[in-house]
Length: 322
Ligand SMILES: C[S@@+](CC[C@H](N)C(=O)[O-])C[C@H]1O[C@@H](n2cnc3c(N)ncnc32)[C@H](O)[C@@H]1O
Image (tube, protein in one colour):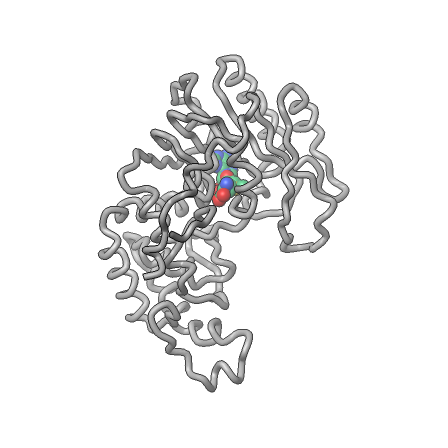
C-alpha cells in the first residue's frame, strides 16, 4: 500500500495552500458537518478535509466553471479523459503522460524551453478558438490552463483569455491530480457558488457543527487576486468573523501579518481576541525571493485538537500507479 499525504488540485492555483496543508489542516475541528470555503480558489484545502457536506464559493467565475466541469465528470472519468485527449490530439499538444512526441532535435536545441516551443502554435490556435466561441467550452479552458503560463487563469477586460503558452506539459502530475479530485469528490455532497464572499455568507444559515475556513486575498502581499482587496474589505471581513463568533460558529482564517516592511495591523490587533498559530510558509514570491520577512498565521476561534484529520490520508492510492 502506498501512502501519501495531501491531494493537489488539478487547477494548480497560484498561491494555493497545497504546500502549507500540513501546517493548517490538523488545526481544523475534529468533526465537521458542513465545511464552508468562501474563498475556495483551486480547492487544495477542501480536497484535504473530511466533512459531511462542502459549500464552496469564489468570486472568480472561470475558476468556479472549472470546478463545476470537474464535478460533472467525477462519476465518469473515462469520458472526461476522452474529451481532454480529443482536444489535445486535435490541436497537437505534447502529452508526456501518454507518449513523448517532442522531436529530439528540439529538445537538444532548447533543453529548458522545448515544451513552450513545441506547444506555442497549438496553444495560440486553441486560445483563439476558445475566445471566439459564443458558448464557452470549459474543457478548452482547462487545456489552456494546463499548458498555459504558470498554469494561471487570466482574462482581459473583453473577457478574453490572454496568457501565453507555458513551459509545461500534460504529465503524470496532472493526471494524478485529476484522479485525486474525481476520487475525493465522488459520492460527496458538494456545491459551488460564484458570489462575493459576503453575499455568499449572508444567505447561509450556519449551525454550531459547521466550520468555515477563510483564505481571503492578503492585504499586504503581491498577487493578482490581492490587487482589489482594501482595508475596508479587511474590516468588513473581521466584523463578519466577530458576528460568527457571537453565534458560536467555528472559523479559521489564514492571513499574512508581516511582509517585508508592510504590516497588517488591522488584522493583527483583531486577532488578539482569538488563537493565533504561526504558519511556516515557504512561498517563493514572484517578485522577490527573500522569505524570512513574512509572518503567515492561522487564527481560530476555537482550541484545536491536533492531528484530528489524520485518518483522511491513510488510504490506498496504489491504483494511480497502474
Ligand atoms: C488566497 S486565494 C485562495 C486560495 C485557495 N485557498 C487555494 O488553496 O487554492 C483567494 C481567493 O479569493 C477569491 N476572491 C477575491 N476576492 C473575493 C471576494 N470578494 N469574494 C469571494 N472570493 C474572492 C480569489 O478569486 C481567490 O481565488
